[in-house]
Image (cartoon, rainbow, N blue to C red; front, side, top):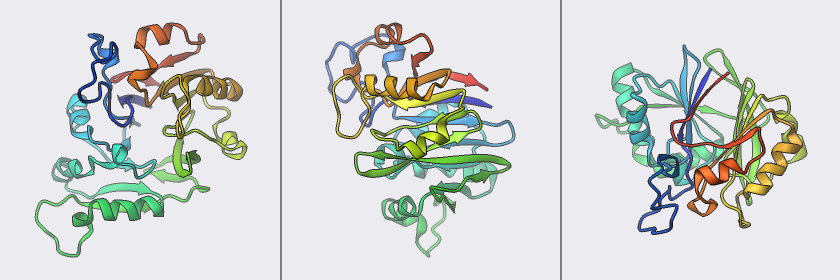
Length: 254
């Protein structure tokens, strides 16, 4: 299984429009972050978690020719806005895109992209097939088992996912003890770490470090990063030995 970080930035990306901070003006490619998403390649099946506003650009960077499914963590636009750009995969693969989401997120998608779900079949519309995720039940994409993990993004329920020994969680600031049990035993954990200062709906870097140490996962990466966190190389160098900042284009294999 190969995981590619398509984007590791917060909702505005890094740099945000008009930002003149030192990080935003950095020439280091690792300080340039598209909206958060990952691509998972099982070999036979390829999927992404979330299709944000940068989805088209991310797929072009990947030179992607196959995509079998999109899994949604939640309904915020920085995670859903690129859904229309699945159309080339509809054309190339001559099949509907398999969409996996909770009932709540499906309802949000139907509002955000109402034209996709109308009865009138307009030529060229994205073709999707909705698959229901229940927060307490594992599901399969092809033959690959995926375990949903419910976290809180302030008061909004958001899903993380465990793919074999890899666990991916973004947009969280609380994970219950019960849901933490689903993470234990992972070989790699990805957590959001927005910045150093407290935030109402995201883990700070230190909160993410503390949780990762509690869960005792051997390898940890942080994502959904704001320019306020600081320069990639400086922050990464100060992290515990088994922890790193993720960056756009990073690939890991399990």
